Image (cartoon, rainbow over all chains, first blue to last red; front, top):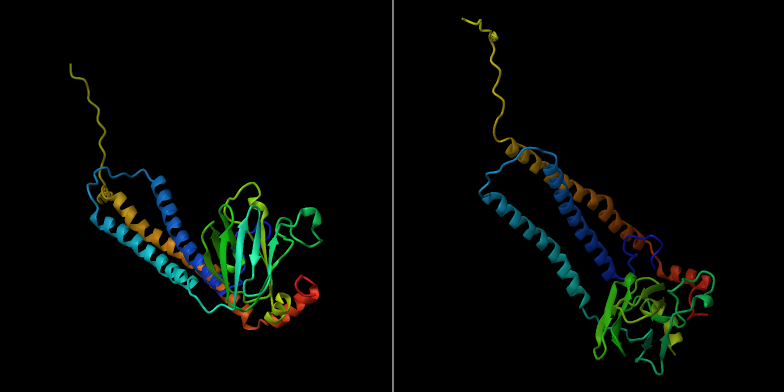
Length: 224
Length: 86
């Protein structure tokens, strides 16, 4: 989960999120490069009285400042597309989990197991135990096996929602009448928090997601 | 009546002052600073890459080099954070 005054991305728990963090660093490096160039140019223009009022054309610089931005964009696009196709890779999943968005809670269905489905409502603040996080805890956590590929099928029962867990690099829209697929994989055990990421009414900010990743043997015991 | 005329005579020294640069001042400034601007922006990018991006990649690699998910899991289980395992 995010800590107070956090500016950067949360620590990665899945391989995809590690790739996304590296890509974010790459894109931000290019942003700083272009911004510093523009800032330098602006300060240059503001600190001189020299003028040149008879410029007619400047073919050489026009060519440079067309080709250079195109090259910069290609430098950004290539790793971006690589990660995009990586997120669509389908590795035989260990488990399929359905997440259904409602106003204003999530429900989960483990169709691979018999009779395993539950609703997940936000834990009201007055029910929190010491050490628990306000507006992030839920009554029934989504338990999943770690180090396993999990297929998420995300949909909604009413309006648009979005199932997002930043640490895993997942954000998938929950659209009524549509099933969106996402792949999850956690490299570590623990608790990972997320929140609804598509405006869905008055309690949009109060339908969090909590994933509890445990060993698959313990998961099998829990699921049965 | 003839009025006396006064004029100031400047005696020229033997060396001649060099003619100052009159044209192309802006072009010269732009030429110098274009190189400077690219160097500064590439420097900023290199600074970000080697001060932030590469250390972050190394931090992830170092974390996972000796990471034991079993040990982490047992510690979390002992701390009682999991609700699905009693």
